[in-house]
Image 1 (cartoon, rainbow, N blue to C red):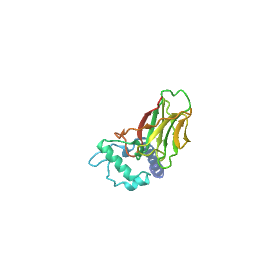
Image 2: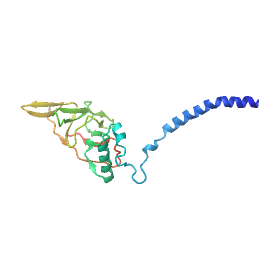
Image 3: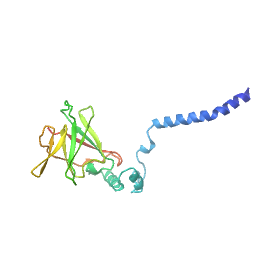
Image 4: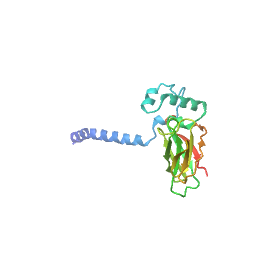
Length: 195
C-alpha cells in the first residue's frame, strides 16, 4: 500500500510541478511589475545614455530620452511635441453635446500641408489621443476644431478652416511640466477648445 502511494506521488509529481509553475506565472502577472517601481539609489532612473541601444530598439531616439531625463532631473518644463514617449493630447470641450468630434491639426513644417488627427471621446466632456510618429514639430502652432478641418489656399495664402468654413486661429502650446512622467510614457498636454 505504501509503495503504491509513493509510486502514485512520484508519477504525479511532474504534473503537480507544472500546475504550480502555471499558477505562479498567473499570480505574478496580476501583481504590478517590479520594473515599474520608483528608482532608488545613486544614479537611479538615469543611466547616462548606457541604454541607448535599448531605447533605439524600442523605437525612441536615445538622444531625446537622455534630454528628457535631464529635463526631469532639473524640473524643467518642456515642449510636449518632442517628448520621446509621445504626447497625450486632451482637449476639454464644454459644448460636447454634438457628435462631430474634435480635431487637432498643424501645418507640416517641411511641406506646408495640413496634418490633422481626430480625437476620441473620453466620456467626461474631454477628447484625447496619443500622438507619437504623427505629431507637430517643436514650437509648432496648432489648430483645434469641432468636427473636421481643411486647408484652403487662395491667392498664395494658406488658411485652415473648420467644418463650418470659418478660418481657425492657431494656438501656441506652452511648455508642460515633466514631473512624474517617464521618458517612455506620453507627456500630457491639456488644451481647451476655443469658443
